[in-house]
Image (tube, rainbow, N blue to C red; front, side, top):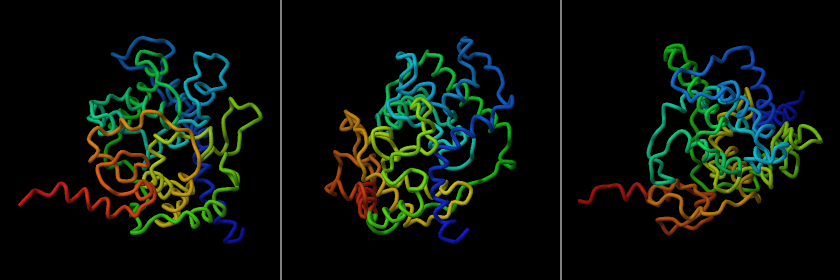
Length: 321
């Protein structure tokens, strides 16, 4: 394999991670690792941790827009949760779910109120999955919460000294605006072979209920513009940390540029985004939609440079002399 070919094979797995791992996750954890629901969990014979894992790994097949039962069609994208939460969330590092339960409840800057783990799951359902919320007492919500509780309990029992730090070197925001042309070049050289030249992904079969081997990065079956992945810095951190799978080697500039290129493309639009972040000074600097608490342009919030925006908000926090 030539150096060029190896390069093409790598970020593609930015992608492979997003699709193949969705399938692999089911196999990796499928050998009896899970335990029965813990005491105190709502009684529901179908709301098992195993079902929760399957919902995260095989979301399209169980909750997607093509499932047989119309009442179970909760997502309008054809992504799976494991598209971003690699290995159904068990893999350490960026976007791991192993410690998710320990972070909730907490105050959410986006909503301005107290957020439960159920709220956070539904945030993903309505944004990343471009769908609708699950009821808190539904078997699906109970199962996913039970699964996340299991991951958290297992992580706590492992002990800090035995945990592996799989994080790549920290992403450092480039001191310039993202270059869409350079990002397109990265995409064409390292991503398109899996996600296709049109970015619409590679379907797993002719039956859309089976989802994707390599998921769509834009277009009607991808995440909407209210999702965290529609922020360039969030996407770039994920790309640098996880892609290509097993050998992440994009530098900060490449990760930022390709993230910006992907997020410059059309995707589903979410209504009501102007209600996000009641305290607009807490809105992340790379949020792609207004209103903002500053005078920087929407394009600068989308693609940078971000340092001047960050400096502006830091100046607001300095005590008056």
